[in-house]
Image 1: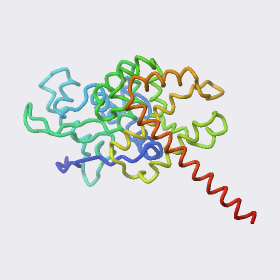
Image 2 (image 1 turned 180 degrees about the vertical axis):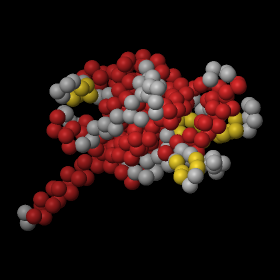
Image 3 (image 1 turned 120 degrees about the vertical axis):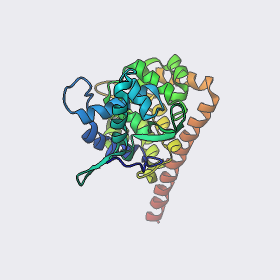
Image 4 (image 1 turned 90 degrees about the horizontal axis):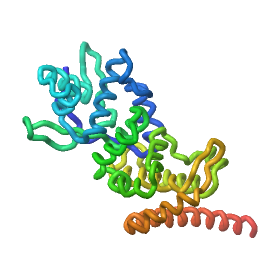
Length: 292
């Protein structure tokens, strides 16, 4: 039996929540590799299929998703729509229940459509977008399409995608690093990268540390965007991660052409400097107290 009581909004947490909860749980439930070329694991394949459709086509009803999957074969669309709806909301059958993708937080409701009959529209959440980048083997062209579809959700990255690509080239696809749960703020990073990557990424985690269980979507988009631009400052090889002067020049060019973006990022930079200055001041005060 499929419940009609759909949640209005999925509760995503911050990037740490994505790394420690959403990603490993989604891997377990829906797969950690792309499954569309396999002949088994039907449930996981169907979920990945739905996520891929939403990535490539944006906000849709379950009917529209089914039509896309079946290329307009109306005789089977109704059955496929029911299947997609069941995947979204979960089901209770013979005393056993299974959670839907809405509860998992990869998809959220996105208003109503009145094209056919009144029906809910759905789109990817930010965690859902990261899962797609992580698992679905999206091509660069498909990532471009997803960025276009979700430009309003991540305005400082996806909303400026073509502009960023014109300057940064393939470096824009470094956002896939984040989808792997690599927040670049652990101590191992501190030992093998040049400052201030670890310090900036650590402050970014501190800035949103209270939002592990729930974060407003615009705040999570902000956290993702700050990670994206900070990571652009560096270039990684097999043995090291160093500040890239060529990347700094590219980012400077981005900021010259977008003063609002420059003001926003430099405000974060100043915030982080103030945070570390206060911590250093506290250490110096303690030193003075101990030496009296």
